[in-house]
Length: 320
Image (cartoon, rainbow, N blue to C red; front, side, top):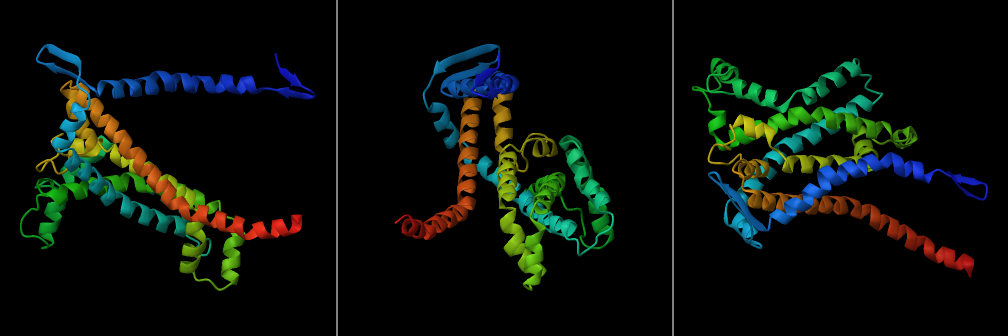
């Protein structure tokens, strides 16, 4: 039955009915496993041969063992490889978004270029990693080309050097995601009121001034979204370095990420340690995302406060 209030008819229950499947699926497949993960992180629970040990409550021993091990090293590896991929990704994406949305440049074939730059995002990470493994191997095409051009005298062992491996992981992440980021930023720029660009042009602003004074401030919400989602994806980096280094994080575990470390505990059935890693990873992601969000929105909040304080005396004078 519809709830009638005066002459109004309420259809609120239909809204609850439509969103119920999402909350049910979230409760079963995400919220309950999250609570179980937190719960088992305080237990000794692993397999030794064919024997299951636990679950035995150990308090915070699992967390203490993580920080006594190389957890910090793996966290540093993850952040470094994310930065190596994200910085060129955001710079190139901003540049392409500005070019493709600037009607004065009259770039031909925009749709074709949009499809081309987005295509790497459709390739599976495993296929991408295998491709790079073949291209940058000791006897691969890249080394052969560099030797034939006289740039190097002998093959450079990309996968045996620390920064070679990290650089390849960052390059793959950049190539896989810059197209998606470009499309998002293009949509953000196209959502800006054209009159703002016209006013800037009439005021004599150069393209550089227009970009930094008009475009960037107006697309800040999308930039925050891109930064936060990229940061979360970076902390969850797994497939590319896992396949490229055969799960070992070579050389000397300098390319092992937090999720690879978590996967090792899951593979060995050490559910207590895996739960502790998951909880710490969740906390790190939440803290970083909140820090980025509030830092980038601090200027907007201060401007709103100054604007409110500036008009407050006027309102008091009018009311008085």
